[in-house]
Amino acid sequence: MMTSNLPLLVDIAQTAIDRLPIGSEMSALQLFRLIVTEQLGQMLTGHAVGDDLETMTTFLGMSLKALVTKTAPAFTLRQAKYRQAKARVIALGREIIEQHRTTQRAQPDLVDDVLAAGLQHPDLLGSEGQMLEAVLGPFSAGLDTVSNECTFLLYALFQNPKVLERCISEADVLFAAGVPQAAQLRTLDTIHHAMMETLRLYSIAPGITRQAAQTFTFAGHRVEKGQPLFLATTVPHFLPELFPNPSAFDIDRYTEPRNEHRQRGAFSPFGIGTHTCLGAGAAETQMMLVMATVLHMLRLEWVNSGEKLKIKQDPTPTLGAKFQVRLVERRHRIIIDKSQVGQPISQGCCKVRGVEKEAFMG
Image (cartoon, rainbow, N blue to C red; front, top):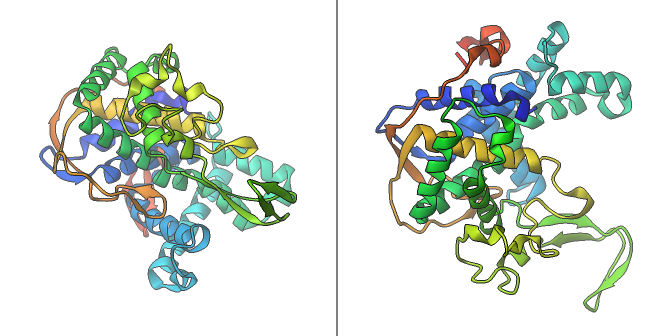
């Protein structure tokens, strides 16, 4: 879906960037969330996020803290702020499902596939709750994953200006003739390796939780069947025997003849084993495309250049709003063939809190 919709994804990013006034300051995380979440929403559900971004952020963040990471008490989910956000997100999911049941698209999207699967497998997608979870998944997928990793990538590039200049030059070549072909994304050596080094140093999934399938002994400790486990899968990312000088941002680790990431068990930014993240390939593609688009279109400045920022858990590792950037200059516009973008999302508008609003695409 992602590689076949590059014109749409680039158009969404360019539209978002065009709406940001030059000279303004904002958190890098918010910049990337504006782009990433909209791309996922429009590409996979045919629906613009618009003003619901903040509501989704509230709902997802509070849910994860209370139910998954257990960093917030359960009564958090009884607060009015959470209940209002949850109600709006559920209403949005119902709108999307209803829209797909009553209209047809030339190219079926994820929601069409979910609805078709629900008819074939009512045991898996028979309830409204199961259907809503499947439909709303794309919106939450990028809020704490791709958006945060893009933020960490930009943070690392600002600290390594020579690598940043190489990435800018590569992005300019990529968009020299307009929207690139999918095969051209695979030529992004510098941006790709910078992304991999960011995933090594700043993984938003430093460990994974599992349950013991059977009783076993490990390092002299008996682990009982059914016992919950936490696997610190990214510890090898910082072992000097695998990655010499592991605290250094070194994008040449991933080139011949070093290929440090290819060592057994060395590089696991998306988990490990049979439950490795299913979205790993899509996440990498989106990270590279979003970063290349931003670097090609804008000249950004780090507001508090050189300041060492603290990473916090909210609920996954993030720089939060502390990493502020200034939009200094519009560098380039990207030539986009609008006939390849498709029809306006949600028939040209989307309802946001009961108000008719122009779709994000315009």
